Length: 304
Image (tube, rainbow, N blue to C red):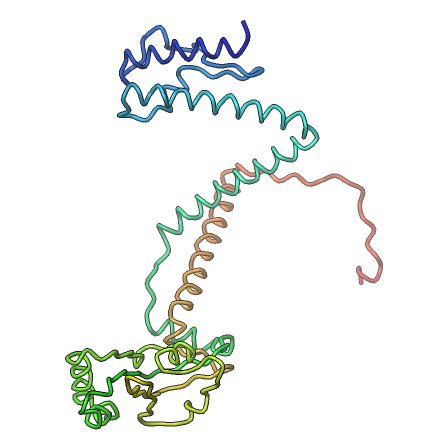
């Protein structure tokens, strides 16, 4: 009987069984090695299908799933057989790569097991600062960053002078008054007083043009001002770090944590590896055999 007809007949039998069972246990006469499809020397059994069917499917959904499952299996086997014929000379190399990948996955899983159990993920400020101070020369800025703030005030607002005075004050109470007014009046306040921001991003809050340079603003202190048709923009630049300067400590905290964590992680992996090696040597599960080759001639100058 042609393979296509065999496969169709098996589909019909399978679907009847699934409809009768309604996704419960398949009938007893479908147990064991009853075949659904064959491609060359490869066989697909009912048991394989049974294991793959998701729980909770209706009879109709199970039938549809079975059609797709068998069809995909057949197509996959056909492609695999053609690939093995076309690339028979590469099969050994593919097998080697697959085995290397399998081993790498297992070793990575083992390493992660001990990392999860043994690596402390907490770092004190002293540890972070110590690393920063010892390696700060390795971290240089490739762009200018600033701390400061920008507020957009409609031209219709009449208390602009007082707002600027509060904004310029160094007293925390007056700074809070400034923030309260901005909140009450619904002014757009872009506050970067506690975090560094790229100078280019800071300028995006001002009525500036990308084609122009505004680096001269970095030289000034106090409250500066710009305006457009509808509003005044008051801004203050508190700190500046330029291209080539050491990256500020606050910016590097996440990076330093990752570096220190990676160090601890590698240390745990090496220590476990060494312990495993030493224990296996003591238990005799490792046997190292010296190669018996011709004795190499050692040059006289090396002997001396």
